[in-house]
Length: 297
Image 1: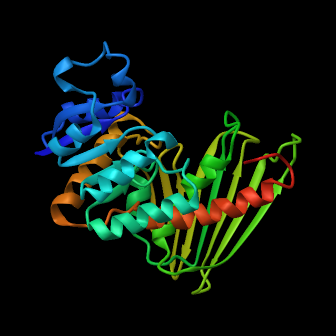
Image 2: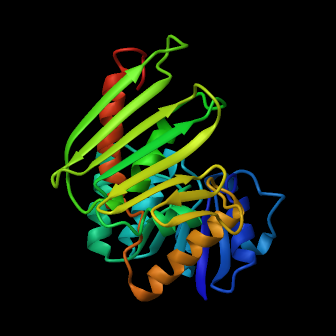
Image 3: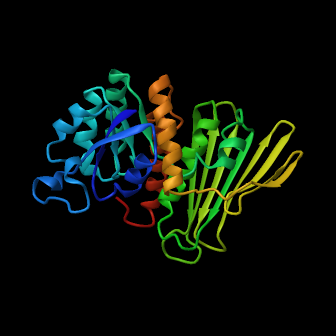
């Protein structure tokens, strides 16, 4: 069992639940800067750490459960001290900050994994990640409950990048304002060096949909992630059971299990810092386009 420390009390609930039901991890404690001023009521006092260095020394791995940028110095310290690190998200970090994490990670030679809301979905894992450089991938999300589309786009891009074994040659971004003054349709097209293409449409107009189409030599798949359906070449079926697309307990269980095996077997996680950096370059292009329409920092 890996001795595990968690950083951030506010976002720790799902991670604590996953660790309690796992035989792969042993909780050592939780640290939050707030503990220096306010003792938590929701945690057994035996697991409360008010000094980060103490938890660092006592743990094999550290889980940063918060996406907030204030934890960046602690993330960097943990990597410098050659700890295995699991991050809930890096979307609040700039490209330069992510590049610095990559540099520290390469020096530490330890495992660094970032949570992803999609890639451990059963259908996605089986029929998308298993592809070898699809000729064309079309990704379509409609979610009329979504106000900000940027994070949805980021998740979609980072999910499919590992499928393409080639560098991005060109990024094309179009934003469209259809029913709002703020862009409500994002169109992103990635052209790769090997001439393969990933095309994304992310919008909050219309009925909720979450679809991926994959085109390859003699192979075609259309996946409905919302209804857990797969159709295509010699296949038409509904998956055995519904799967979870977004950060819920079952998804976290799968990812922590994968993290454990990456640590033990010295594997490179699917969603690593390199993948997030490439995604950040795409997101940067989207933000540049959005600045023509709205004041986005």
